Length: 250
Image (tube, rainbow, N blue to C red):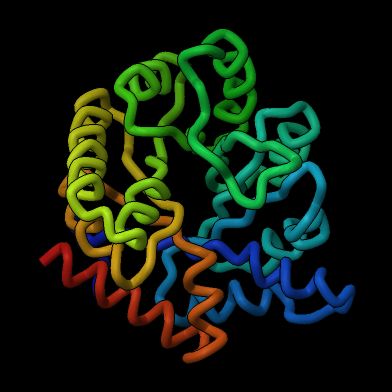
């Protein structure tokens, strides 16, 4: 499909290919191979989260991705000096700063940017100077959106996990309220000249209503696509997600 102004970009997160590799202690499956397949299937970018404990993506994966990818790398990381140094070494297209707790299974909630305006402003500065587009992974709270603009982020990524949980739990009235809050947040962020992305927990069943947000520019999806690949293959899973996103844009 040709790239148009209205086309929603799809970033494919390959973390959990590395999770499967690490569970066996083997060299396969290779997350870099998964990234290349994702590119061939229509991904507009690749997302990889280098965690402090290296539970899935490892330093060598980041080096290999930077050397191999034809599409942009979105490097997810915590706001720590170690991760800042790695980002400045490789200078990926985009850096997405996420909250990180060692004991969590997956990223829980969004950054509390409003509570750390001074620290995050200082932290983001060198990344911006290095040419990285800095994104902050946040909730739909207007205070967090306003703070993200103040600290100098170019992008926010709205956490869609609660919306997806409500859908899968069958709590549809609450789901619709959460969906509307996300839509309002995307409009508000765009009014502050922030580019708006979204992600976390999205599936074939939940992606359409979010993809339809007119101010949204990118979705980042990983765990579901890797899970679905077990049954239908990675390329068909990505192509189906791409189809649903495009259909939602109409």
